[in-house]
Amino acid sequence: MLGTSGHAREILAIAEAAGGYQLLGCLGPRRAADLARLPVDWLGPDDWLRDADESVRYVLGVGSGAVRTRLDGRLGPYRRTPARLVHPAAVVGPAVELGPGTVLWPGAVLTADIVTGRHVHVSTNVSVGHDAALADFATLLPGCTVAGSTRIGAGATVGAGATVIDGISVGAGAMVGAGAAVVRDVPAGAVVVGVPARPMERRDH
Image (tube, rainbow, N blue to C red):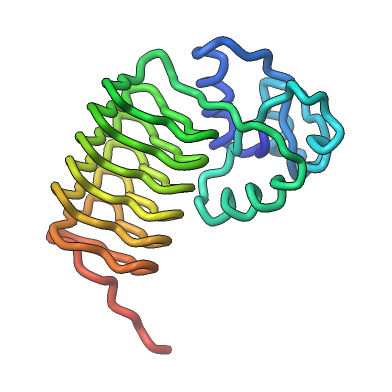
């Protein structure tokens, strides 16, 4: 596990519930407050993975899609294979393709004909409809709904309790605020909030 925060601890619990892997420990910054709460050993900084046995797989236990993107790029030369983790209380329907490093929290539902990219995180009680595509490093936060035939761009985040209606595209790096209702396409890098969702107003100081 790369990461030592609360997000990483949640993913460790998913790995334990899913089974199939021996949990070796966590990598990342040596912050005493985080390490004291880890249920596994701290193995060292991220470059520990460089010299690990070839059979070792990893997961990016970081909530930010932008940070996961940077970490994945840094790990590329190590030629390691990310693990996919699916909590047993998640539902994965027919013809769903999970990309390497994808993590599904308990209560996540992916209905049918859905594709996820690398290191996509689908949190607790998230619903994803048919024919959706979640690009690399996308993050779906607890309780959000992503309806059918949607496109969530690379590194985009859909906030807790938000709804993205059918056929909508959320651009790369965009942020959908908590509880928002997205009824039109969201440009790359935009931040949208409210019902219906609108771009957040910028305040000049």
